[in-house]
Each structure stands twice: as structure tokens, then as C-alpha cells.
Image 1 (cartoon, rainbow, N blue to C red):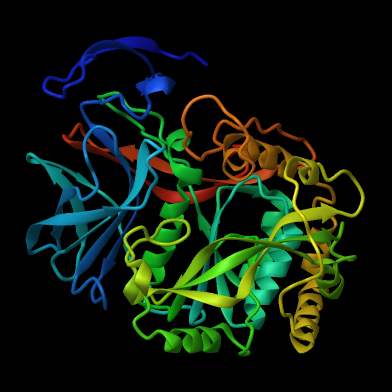
Image 2 (cartoon, helix red, strand yellow):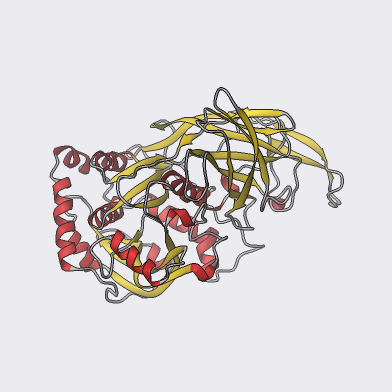
Length: 497
């Protein structure tokens, strides 16, 4: 493939940078300057609009509200509380308003997740971003006003996903206690994806696209966004899920696939969360700590037994930073663990139970090299799982497993790890080793991101990958906008992030 490499001279007067006039290498518009990715100022901040929602009514956003979920270059100027001009029209009336924003990112990444909000005309038909008389129309969705269940569990984006055993554990536990999974997928082994589709047909979950960001056209240079945003823009996925179900769910939980919650006292999540909230009525969230666990996983669905899985669970004394459950009217945006803008005094810490964090699934046969890379002590299970719940979950699993279509899919599921150890080592090298084991590294803290992981492709396991049509607006200052539309599942991209 031909890569166009040019040099742009950028004159940025008044920014106090001795290098305000400089020659910068550019490849297809992308700035190649890794050593100054957090200090190099560019003339325009490029914005990818992940999603936009319209609310005729909202308990926390007001009447005819607009919520924009975006990724913004945060280095060129301060975007902590940036404003955006928004034009809404309904065929007879047009209204320009200013959207205020909050960011949910970390300073070690050039791009940050941002949520902007405003109020517009009723019966919105057209949404545009505006700057200095230049406008671009952007797609929007109507927010949900009904939910499959009162508790929605937003699962962070999955890529090169192959750990179907972990999914079976989570989806059946959630179903037992009245939760509905909302799953974001970037890429997934095809047979595993087909299995998820069967669960979606039965109402256990909703599958959603999580796209790589692309700037289709750009008249000004930019840093590549996917490698310069925290963990695949995970905060953007959690915020998208929150904005989707804001007026529909009673509670929304922001979990990873390996975060499993068993209620300690009540038979449903709804009752358990209500009881915890009653302990601190002014709470804005419930924070559940995550206790590390390992378990032995079955090689096939025929061997899979929920009872045996639980019997193999071993607990660590380590309880990591938790994840929150919120009443959606108390949150308008979030980071990965909680919102940076939340008053910590109103974050209710749940002392028990903890999330069962099954980050270390062990193979029955085959090496488990991750145990050598990230050493941790484990002992007997230290969380409560009721026998009657275990029995019902086991029966629920076999009801699905005995379906002929599911049985056919099960024969094609991966039976050994391939991508897990590759991704785990990449994560460890780029972030976890430095944070948890104090592994020495050269230079400052990098953006927590594994976008440069080398992921080998296999002929025997192909992946389904999310894709879409991508669009770029005209040159605008200070923000130029990019977005996608018409998302679809592709078999042609491969097993990549």
C-alpha cells in the first residue's frame, strides 16, 4: 500500500512554544511524533463523535436534550469544560445553542472522552455542529425509554475475544439475578459471536458495535486517535451505554466481562441495590470492590459445568479498585471505574460482597503462562454463592446448551487459549507491570493502551469485526468533526482491535 509521507510547516503564534515553527513528518495526515504526543500543539483539535442522543424528556438533562459522546484531542488547548455550538431543527424551527462539556480521561493520553449536553427544539429532525458559520450534519439516535430489565450491565468493549467460558458465567449469573448485559464488540472469534447471537435472540443480552475511530478526510494534521486514547475508549463505551438507557433503566452497572456479581442478601440485583442505596439515600453510586480470582475452565460446552467452575474458584486477598452501579439520573457521563466529577462523599462503598474478578481463567490442559507473568496468591473462595442459585444457574445453562443450534456452534468454539496470553502480556508490558509490580520502564507513564499489540491471524479461527461508513466534516476551527453511520458486522477485517 502506498503511504504518502509529507512535511508540514505549522506556525502557531502566541503559544509560548520555542518550537512553534517546526517541520513535522506527516503520513496521510497523521503526525509522527511519539516523543511529544502530549505536548505538540496542533492548529485544530480533531473530534470523533462516537454517538449522539436526543431526549424529548430527561430527568437529569431536561426537555429536548442533546447528549454528545465524543473523543477530543485535549492537548492543543484546554478542553476541560469546552463548549460546542449545536444547531437543532425540526422542519419549521431552527435553534443554535451552546453545549457545555465534561471530560472523563487521564492526562497520560492525548485524546480524552468528553460528553457535551444542551437543549434544542422539540421533535428534533436534524442535528448539526457549527463554528464560524460552517456547519456539518451529524447522525443522532433517540434515547431508549424502555429496557429489557430494570438493571442494565454495560460490558466494556471486547476485542479478539475468545473466552466463551467467562461469558457463560457472566450471562447466566446476570440472568439469574435480573440483569441484562449490553455488550460492546470490536472483534470476536466467529463461533463465539454466533453463540452470543443465540443468547441475544433469547433476551439475555444486547450486542452493540464498538468501532475503531477513523478520520476519513482531514485538512489539518492530527495524531492517530486509537493509539492515543485510554483502553480503546472504554470510558466512551460506558458513557454510551449510560446515555442509551438513561431514561429506561432503574440501575446501570459498568462492569468488565470478568466482573461477576453475586448478591449477598437479596434474590435480585434490584432488591440488593435498593437496600444498599437505603443505607445512604444521597448516594450517587454504589462502588463494589473487585476481588481477584482464578478458576479452571472447561475445554468444551459439553464439559462445562457451573458447579465445577464454582468449585474451582480460588480467591485472592487482593481487592482492586472497584466498579460502580448508578441510578442513571445521578450520572450523565463516566470514566472506566466511576466519574471523575462525582463527589467522593456520595460514592457509597459496598463492604460486601465484592465483584468476583475472574481475570485468571486457567486451562485444564496446556500452559498457563499468565500465572508466571503476574504472580498472585490464591486461597479458598472468600465470597458467598448460594446453593439454590447455583442449581438454578446450572439448569438455565443446560436449557440453552441442549438447543440444537447451540450444540452445533459449541463444536466450533476455541478449546485452547490463543489470544488471551498475547493480549495479557501486551497489557502487562504496557501498563499492569508498571502499576502493580513496579516493573521499571524508561520514560514517563504511557497512555494505557494496547493498540500496538501484534495480533497474529489464524485460518482456523476467523473473527467478526465491527465496521461502519465513516465521514468527516469540512475544515472547522477550533474543532473539526468526524463520525460514523450505518454500522455492520464484517468478516473481512480479521482479528484485530
